Length: 171
Image (cartoon, rainbow, N blue to C red; front, side, top):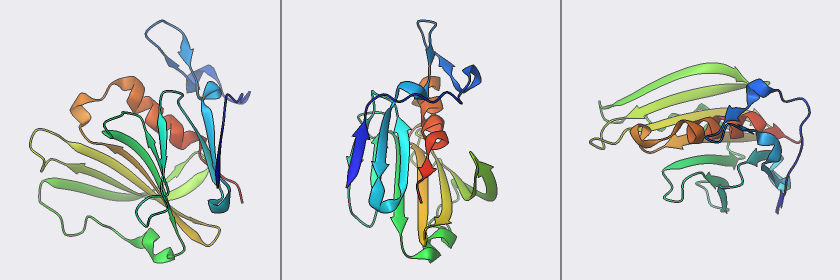
């Protein structure tokens, strides 16, 4: 079961968390929708223009579509298979794919991060960040995916990062 609520306010956010839009006003995550997945113990906010695609498959629990053509997505997958958090799906992949792995502390959580840049699709460049964390006896995999880094605008790219910044584990 999940819930989507309307506008929320977060007084702890500052103007530095905001992005100026074309009309000169600040766009903040404060007026975004809130998505809660209670049985998986997480919630996040996402832009009003984005859409949610929810599945209960082994691939992805929840996807936020920032572009209707699926070219920019924020995905969350949860699994009781803790070993998933130690996996690297890019181990045996083309030489045109650059993969780096590190530990990062983002927004109060320590993640194992895989950064992927895949140039094998010709002129399109897949850019993906995968964040792995174990919480609540589950592996959470969070994926920021941009199918063509050359065609993304700065606002959409910023919104993708802002979604991650609002992610909260509720248990």
